[in-house]
Amino acid sequence: MVSWPTRMAGRPPRRNAARRLLVCAPVVDTIATTLEAELRARLTPVEDIGVAERIGIEQEFVVRTRDLSPVDFRSVLPRLDGLAPPLDPDDPRARRTASGVVLTADGREAEAVAPPIAVVPGFTDDVAAWTRATRHELTSRLDDAYVLEGYSTHLSVASDDGHSARVGALFARTFAPGFMLLVDRAASPGLIIRPRPGRVELCGEFVDGPWMRAAAAYAAGAVLACDHALTGTTTFATLPPQLVVTTPGFAAGSV
Image 1 (cartoon, rainbow, N blue to C red):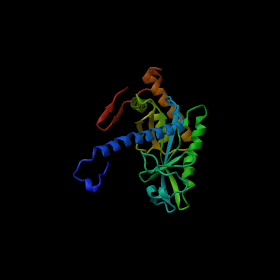
Image 2: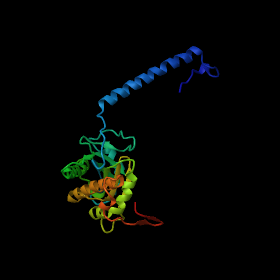
Image 3: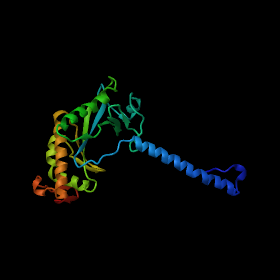
Image 4: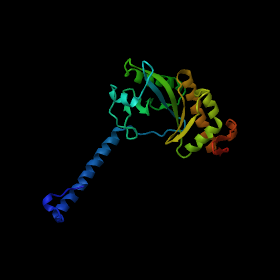
């Protein structure tokens, strides 16, 4: 917005002044266009990612003092060293490490997010390595006054936006019980399945080690199987028997 000088208050701007403003506007647009073109040239082109060709890991931790009192990680994160400035528009707390792991806070808990992992033969070795890296990026920055306690694990599997919600619903009726045996406990409140842009997110209790390897392999294969059944690549008969999923006040039949 242009502020006219005080002496011109109440009077319309002269035509030549307005003309000068109009001449300047395209110059700004040209600069912005040039900067955008330079930025795009420096970025790596985004490749098309097929269903279940990438998997993501998010590990959440409760941060405690040595006397086991819980700490709000939101107050600790800004004081950690070796992190890039917060630049994520969707999460103003997110800080990137040199390894690519992102540290942030989900409520009071600490969250460490690994870069997407390619689902190729032997990918569970990469899953195990990045799982260790997520914890290391936190423990290496927290001093001896704090300890970490696993809180939850989120696995995201690449999916087609066109029917990721249906994939999640079908997963709930077919593969969810097996996945819960891998990531939940007897007292767990249940499994959370969230359709996200370009992925299906599966949230359960905290796991690592061989349980994380198994959960990642199961999640990738299950999402791919659900997608194939919905798109007609395979039949629904290839899936586990569908359950009738009910919640208070709601009942869902088969897909």
